[in-house]
Image (cartoon, rainbow, N blue to C red):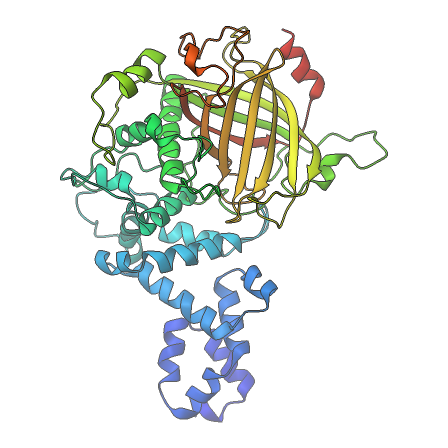
Length: 487
């Protein structure tokens, strides 16, 4: 009876099901198998009913809709499984699929199928002693997905109650750390009893000066000289900043709204959407920012955290150093947190260098920054200059310099999570920069720079710490920024 129906009707019946029912139907008889197996239009329409178009594959002309749909069927099966070991075996496969889904998510404001799919299968974890009767299999699997895919880096292995003495990083550790960064909800307190809180272990990674070197330009990069992203360091920065921003929210009675609470929000290219329309300009010729593929020009919120320098120095140089390859002990401490407003604009473009990704130009920017805490703080208000460029891996690298009285004092290196134009923002490190011998210098922790540090590009004695910035408006108010510098 079914085979006697017109192909158009049979096609519609197949579309009413899902991947599992399609496989079942295909195994019923040779005629149905032949109808389904070579029906690329059917695979395409069924895929597009559930997910956004895989734009990069379509652009590259490498799309095979049957393979694409079946691969997503495997991903869905893995995410719905309750077998933790089975999930972990396919970490690389799932990480690659999630990366593809995020890169195919439409720009902010456009309807999306990928984002609800990811948020459904990776709901924020909650602590429960046992599943509730009302919990669906998908609801039970969601926290398991988080622990199986986002909690497999060395950070979480160090936080296990029965931690191994030596923990070496691997490719899968980096993949899991990257997934955690894309997930965006910092997992400080894992939802199972096997782990301790991750903050002290993340803090020890962020403030251990052995993790900083000239080869990595003191940024969140691996020591390869080509700026490959060290996602475990970015993960540690995210956990530390999220912990401190939660404290800010608590101490201000929620006047400072919580950040980074919704999974995967802003972790896709071009996900930033201006809440305030940019001001109309009287310029007749297109300003440089119109040629800026990174959409730099605008106003940003920035957060930096730092230790008192005495504590920072003691942690790195006074305490007995651990053996080579071993991390320093967990650091559970109180950090200072500063919120900063940055106003920057794109100024010029240049061709990418040998170590840069070649798809986009290098864009220079200038601007100002001022603290939301104390305008008279000598370390709070400064001029800013910097660059944005692609790495060889295609990640977006931000470099900035804080300039006081014409001299570069602080430098930052970071990676924009989610790619070009993402709303999540840039996560990385700030650190002490070059200071000439003709000027005395004091760090945020209050110490005078040592004589042997001077005339170096990077201070061997620090300080350094975590930082992040994210765009809040396309408006660039140059006059307001200048008036705050002259306050």
